[in-house]
Length: 255
Image 1 (cartoon, rainbow, N blue to C red):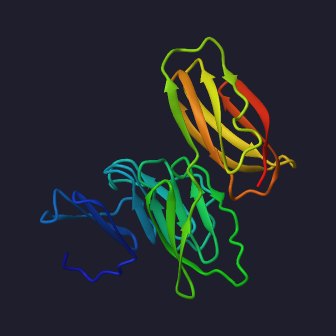
Image 2: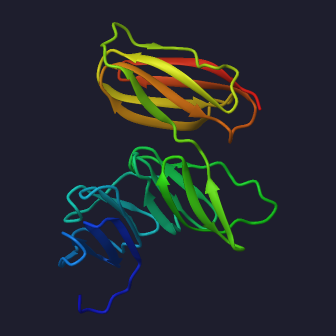
């Protein structure tokens, strides 16, 4: 690279993918650290932060909008997002469909690769929190750099939908969570007779969605692990739905 650069961000997926952004250009190194840098500029609009989750799928933000590539950065398209503004950092969480974005005083998490975003629970501190950059090694924790020399480890226990069996059920069925009441975590088993996008949503007593995840699943028996240590004690409702199937049950969280 021989031009003058404005280095907005740099990232590394592995030794076969290194990148950095210069406003409307993406520079990508593949084929090992001694390879040749590629310059890509197709649809980028001020690439402030960029994150690749694999060699083909990547995301970039101009601090407000979010764009996505599925071909290694050759082309980019804007996707629907509730990302907000003032994005400082954008990362993909290894081993999941999660993206995390930080701004001056908030964090947002996407459980479905940027299609929708949710704010995390506010930090309960006596002074102001100035959030900077973040990083994650897995789904169990996120490290966040904060003002006044502080480093936060954000523990939220990733809500996962794990498969327990491959036998095709006759009916769609959602079981009562166990244990119930629970503190801090509980498990919810359900049977899915047909393949489809599965949505797991938790609501408070006012009907507000406070947690949501969706994953595509084939027929089988599944279990959701829900961790609620960030919640206040009380009654909550969880709903699992997929295509024409939907069922809601009540659960109680007691600290």
